[in-house]
Image (tube, rainbow, N blue to C red; front, side, top):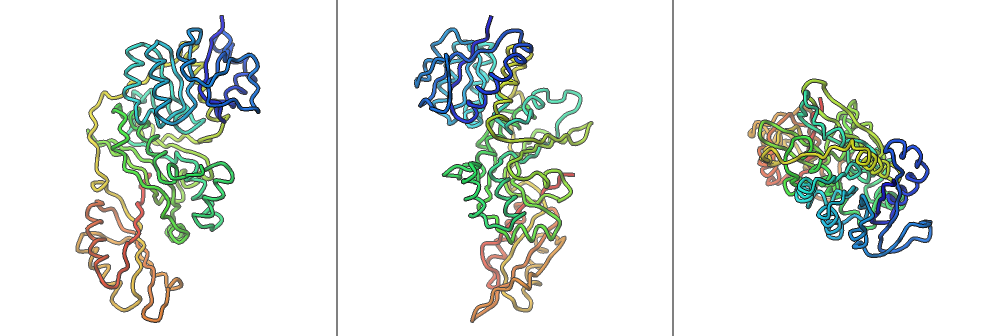
Length: 427
């Protein structure tokens, strides 16, 4: 008896899924005990380069809902509205769904998982975060004798590729982005990736699984990498750091911290060595220290392999539906987060300015770990000269730092705004 599968979408991941399910048919049948057969595909258009053979094709997603011969539906169309309607209809009909769609889960995941539990059907989503890395499977167990204290990761390949190119080759952000688009790593409109929202959606899902809280995308603090410059990267390197776009989740008693932003990462940490479009997630645990997961975060075959992992686990009776939302969510405001900071200040090149900066910081109990005047980078004009001053602070509550920056920016000799980048302690 075959296990019949329908696929929504015919893009890169769907094509990878069709290829892998065909070339590994015997192995998959051996795992599940029955052959896996893709019997129906629905997509906006048929692609000439994809040979569907006897697989039924239509442009109507509703056909996947109505086809009672299907055992599972795999949603690979992306977006929210159409995907949400399809997933909800299938689950309500008692049909299991596998999705690679982080956006629909971040927006509607609590509702969809509740429907799946009520109908006792699976809603699987290993492929929704970090491509081929099995991080969802790991987090579903929550390490019963080994609680997770924090997680942090590089979970957007576009940002990581751009920052790697800027760091390794000294190219400007705009040039690195253009190359990422040419290689297919970034969309024509890259805002969703470089603005941080893609990583924020993924973090909301990871935090819900790691700490048993509801998915809460609206509570994730989000910054992108648009304002990172070559000078920032070079100055951070001189202090012994790389700049990476990080997703961070942390539980302190009943408070959950969720933030996505550029960060200085110590060069000897694994995350500083994750380059190009690779992804990585680190878990800080109570008894086994730091667990690390690395691998391809995107790509047709990598993502399709996670879809197949879900499919075979469900078909063989090994799938475990994740439970989330058991704990109340008390989000921590970014202004309450404590960290060290990298500051880049454009100051007038005249006596007493550095002393003024130190006095303002000291008045807010902010101590300086390192400070460098970039004399070789002085910008001279007819009226004045401006020198970059780069500071690494010790740990401070962000609210206090912001107060000090406001005061500094009010000084005549300080240009506004002051660049700040958080430093992440990953010990």
